[in-house]
Amino acid sequence: MSEPQRHIPTAFETAVNDAFKSRSKTNETQLAAFDRYEKLRLPNRKVEGWKWSDFNMALRKFEPSRAEPSAKTIAPSAFAGVDPLEFRIIDGRIELPDEDMPEGLRFGVMDTVATIPELENHAIAALNVSLSRKALGLEVREGVTLERPILVRHINTGAGFCFAQTMMRFSENARATLIETYEGEGAGFYSHLFHTVVRDGAAVKRFVLHDDAGDALTHSICAVKMDEKARFEQTAFSTGGRLARHETHLHFWSPSSSAVLNSASFLSGERHADFTSDVRHLAESCQARQLHKGVASDSGRNVFQGKFFVQRNAQKTDAKMTANALLLSGQAEANHKPELEIYADDVECAHGSTVGALDDDALFYLRQRGLDEAAAKALLVEAFIGEIVERIEEDGIRDAFALSVKDWLDE
Image (tube, rainbow, N blue to C red):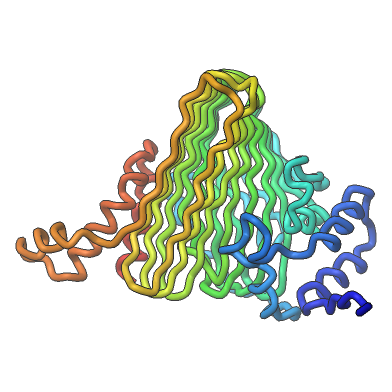
């Protein structure tokens, strides 16, 4: 009988193992998380839900040495025009704003926490818990409406890897807008874990713009707990990277809440973007709407995986999901996996998915009216993604998202 094959650690596995062992202080939660990670190892294409986003293979090219962070002054954010309250996480290091905060917003640096039970077998989440040193903590107090948006900038300046966490609480009947950007020229691996609770009657709008280096590997998790009559709206755009995956795990714990999840990826070269979501209806009379738009040229790869889970007692659930992709070349890819898992009988749930190319008749119509081929194609792509852009009610934020699409088209 042959002996089982011994696992030979990759450069990445060796580097994170050394990083964990070198920590001067670890708690029981972090020890347990790293033990889970070592048993699970990084997800690969053989693992359900990861067959199109193989982090194990991507990180085999990992270079353990970290370049010195760039000494350049960090440029203003694309959202500077909306006068946000700006927080920065630079290579995993938290920088707090040096200005007076409005009443009703609490913030600080806090200890990291474990992930949600549904992510116990998530290797990257476990690695994040074990290696994140501190977390950015934010709280919007009860009944407070923040006039200025909160901006969290995730800035990657080097190689190697870094991990970060954000904890945010929106108290009862609070109103706030949160913007997150993933940016920088670094080629490393960045993992971010974001926990948020939206309490009774609170309303939150979250905007995510991911536009960093083509060599970067990015993984983010947004875990949202929804209480009664709460509202959560999310709009997320990504230009991808060597491998970029943004996950949303949203749980309706109490009745009469609603969520909107809109996302778009526009990819060129060999960039890869993955939007994966898991929406769990655990209470009755909750509503979810999800729309994804993916555009890929060259050898770009667009991935969308969305799941609505409806528990038996979650009657009167109303959930609809749509994913549409536009391929601009014969080498581009779109991989969609919409899912419904329903155990209640009084529900309205639906999903749809389409993949196609630009409409020849529409192109011909525009060419007949004086546009050259490139301009005609750009106009059609802009209109395709514009369905999501136009849903953004805030003028300055909408303009920043529209500009990101225009910049991509201009390239």
